[in-house]
Image (cartoon, rainbow, N blue to C red; front, side):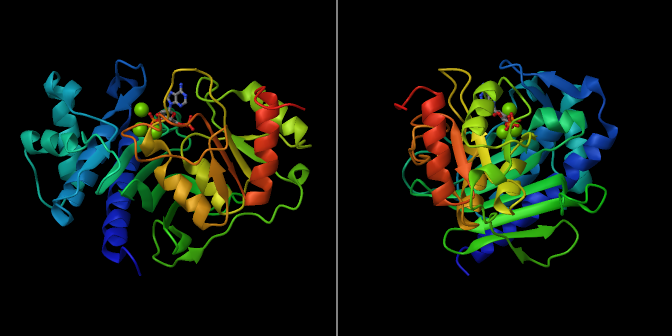
Length: 332
Ligand SMILES: Nc1ncnc2c1ncn2[C@@H]1O[C@H](COP(=O)(O)O)[C@@H](OP(=O)(O)O)[C@H]1O
Ligand SMILES: [Mg+2]
Ligand SMILES: [Mg+2]
Ligand SMILES: [Mg+2]
C-alpha cells in the first residue's frame, strides 16, 4: 500500500491526540478557555493535541515540515496554562518532555506550505466550538505532496459509528490515500470498513449538512439551495470535518459551506483530509465557483471560496448549478 508507514503513524498520532482531547473534555471548565486574537476559543486540548501529533511526526519523519493551526505564543505568557498542557501531554506521551520541548513541538507547525515537496497539515481540534459544547469535533492530519493531498486521517471521538444509533459506539476514525479508497474504523478495533458515498439518484431524496455556526457558512443561502434541489428534510448541522465523514459514509449526500465573509480564507487544515476522504469514497468537491481546492498556495485556500461537496460528480454538478443561481453567479 502506498504511504503505508505514513498512514500508520498518522492514525496512531490522531488516536493519541483524540484520547487526550476526550480526557480534557471530562475535566474541562470554562477557565481552561483562552480567547485568541481571532476570538476563536482555544483550549488546553488544542495545544496538547498539536504537541502530541507534532512530536510523533517529528520522531518518524524528522524532515517533514508541518502546517499546524496553533502556535505556542499564549503559552509563553501563561505559566499555569503551560503547566496544565504539559501535564496532559506527559500523561499520554511515552517519553516525558520539558515545557521547552513541548512549545518547540507545537511551533513545528509554523511551516508556510506551498507548491513544492511534502508537508503535513494538522488541525489538532477542528470544531473547537463543538468540542466545548460536548458535540462533534475532529482531529485532522493530512499529508500534502507537491500541492496535492495524498493522505488524510480524521479522528471523530464523538461521532457514532452508526448515525442511526446515536446511543451506540462512538468514536469514528476515517482515512484515505489517493487512489487507495476511503475507510472507517472504530477507536477500539483495527477492523477496517471500506466506505462509499450514498447512491443518490435525485437530489430531492437526500439530506445536506452544514456548519452549526451561522458565522462560518450562510445558512439562509444554503436553505435556498436546498429548496431549489427539492430537499425537504432539515439539514444536519454539525461542527468540524465530521461533515466530510458523514458524506463519505453515506449519511448525508451534500455538504455546503457558503461564504459569509468576502475576505475570509478557508484554512488548508480545515479541508485537506476531508476532501480526500470524500473523493476516495466516490464523492466530488469544489469551491462555490466550481474550482478544485488548491492546497499549493500556502496555509490558506486563498484561490477558493466556500465548499460544495456531494456524493457523486453528477449530484455535485446539480448542486453547484443551484449554488451559483442562489449566489447570483449564473443566469436562470
Ligand atoms: N468566518 C469563517 N468562515 C468559515 N470558516 C471559519 C470562519 N471562522 C472560522 N472558521 C473555521 O471553521 C472551522 C470549524 O468548521 P465548522 O464551522 O464546519 O465547524 C474552524 O476550525 P477550528 O474549530 O479548528 O478553529 C475555523 O477554522
Ligand atoms: Mg481555530
Ligand atoms: Mg479547524
Ligand atoms: Mg482547530
